[in-house]
Amino acid sequence: MFPRADRGPCKGTRDKLPCGKDVWWTRTETGAWFPVDLAPREDGNTAVRRDVHGVLRSRRITEERTLVPPEKLMMPHAATCTGKPRVQAPPPRPPKTKTSPPAGHLYDLLGVARAASQDDIRKAYRRLARQLHPDVNPDPEVARRFQEVGEAYHVLSDPGRREVYDLTGRPPRAR
Image 1 (cartoon, helix red, strand yellow):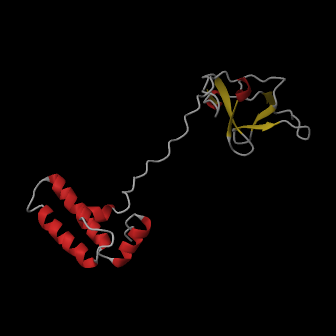
Image 2 (cartoon, helix red, strand yellow):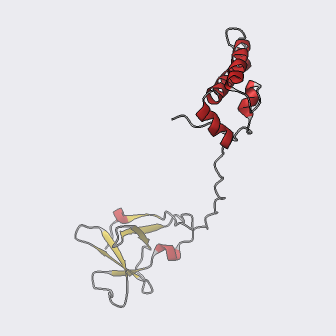
Image 3 (cartoon, rainbow, N blue to C red):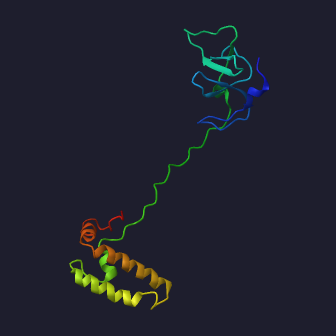
């Protein structure tokens, strides 16, 4: 009744690893692949037949839909699979989040108080820019600090961005 083309190894289930036994791969009425044991069994609960296109089809036997002559009674392989239980994977780790700098970090970078005026912020930025500019000091660490000072000035020099920073403790996102 069944050619070898429909045979293949067990691929396991959600709960069990594959056992490696040969099974018949059938299509259910919903179109899903469904493995059944190789030999027909009287205590099985699945009807298997070959349709007009040569595809093995399987369906569950019910009181309303009993076995018809071209079908064979088979046992679903999941009921007889001897595969070992799958080890449950540990729960996924939460994604790493960037730690936000403490509130007031940008003010500390420029060396000014939170109540500093726009003029004080501009003066502090220009003083630090002269000291930390890469043309004056070629050290890579100083260049990184120069960039941080520039970003701090960018946020604190704009009244709208500064207000958002003062309320949230984080610089606003660029649009």
